[in-house]
Image (tube, rainbow, N blue to C red; front, top):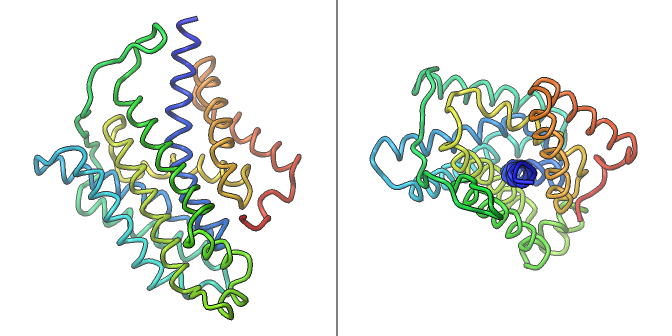
Length: 283
């Protein structure tokens, strides 16, 4: 029983950070139709933002805020200088963002090197949950990640900004005739996407080995979440929970390689069952 509870808590913490990573990706793909292969590097930027603030003796919360702010800034700059020129040819976004990912990765390596770095755990120790001791920081990480994802969904569903975002996603030209500035909306959405990725990076920094290529692992599974969820943002939570459960449980019973294959198989089956999922307009 204790083992089941521990595994469940582990799945929830993995699903939370995966959902936070994937919801940013879902914003750029589902709402803007941009396939952003640099999303993992935006996450890595957030990780190294935490490294820099920790090296300067600043508290963990300051690192989290700084990472989110830097992610927003980098995302906005990327949208203005690169992505804005690709809306009429979204297939080119694959090549453009792939090149951007290489550039960002190389810049990080030049500045910080290839060696592993560590960020101190702000909440060491464990908390008793249902009779099982679970790392306190992972509980905080889970709560924060879920809170941010739910906040994003609430903004999209219940605010005027969310209404404008959904209008532009449905028909940008028609939205322009109604007074919605699609250029500004796209800027906000892409910046938010990068900011969410950087926030996810800052959250995982204390519980992982930091290195320049780490974003690739996270974004791989995040892409699978978006494929399973389709171009809707809300199902990301369910898809993240399902894939995290498969990956964590398969890793526990077998090994990480088979877990990765199991996740791929699940994503493939989901697309076969709902072949139009990845091509529906966000709502």
